[in-house]
Image (cartoon, rainbow, N blue to C red; front, side, top):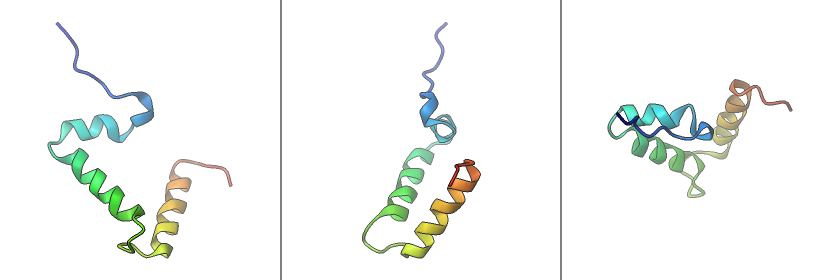
Length: 62
């Protein structure tokens, strides 16, 4: 019996989770592309707030 392929640790937590829901990987990629695009889809201030919130959640030191 073979085990299903698991994503590398650096892809966690979304790597494994996106394999459980059909279309989730594509949706996450589209969301990420919209957030960080230079085309002005998302205002720069919102990008900064997303970055800061992510840093807080990941317990990054300033």
